[in-house]
Length: 147
Length: 103
Image 1 (cartoon, rainbow over the protein chains, first blue to last red):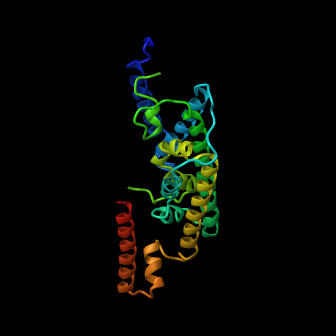
Image 2 (cartoon, helix red, strand yellow):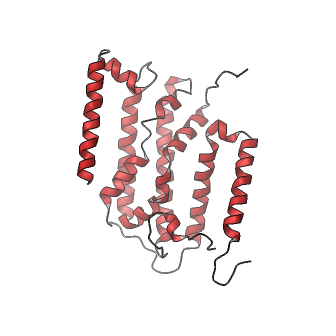
Image 3 (spheres, chains in turn red, purple):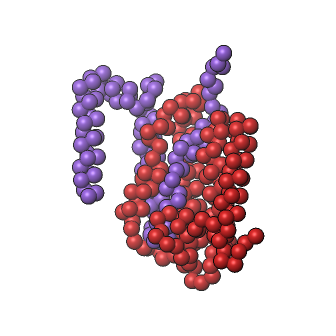
């Protein structure tokens, strides 16, 4: 099934079929409506994907420097990534017990922060020896159709 | 007949907030973390997370019985719509100046 050059049309076809089945499954169980399940599932899928990224990382000097470049851009991006100010009040008000709102907010930031740490470190050590073309996102390291 | 809107459970509310927080930046994060270095990554994620949490914390403790932050600000200005509009103008001006700096 996998040609010698590593490119196969089967890969995107399988992806599309699995994603369609996944969406139908979520709709059947009404998971999406209750906890915005589509977003949660895509995040969980990405976290699993990163395990594969680091498990299949090319051998070599897999070290990330302690201090690198682009701190300002990194901080600006993370400031935006953590930003929930625009929508969190209507969401948090959906929970009737107002005394627990601060706890909910704290837990959301702890879980979100841990997820970001996981993605940053597992992803960084997973791509450190990979070659990408015109690298802008992690997808640049994994061309469509390549196994 | 539509059923009345249900309130969310504790767990669901936390998950909804996390779901809204984590967006497209996760596709870029591994690359900037690899370029930035592990110490920089540790510090920046922690610092930005704390600052963002603190701003939400401040919003929440000042919210009172208001439905959103706009109403809270209007109450803070004693119901003066002029002051509220002036405040919005100041915010808009600050963002515009930052955009000029970007270019």
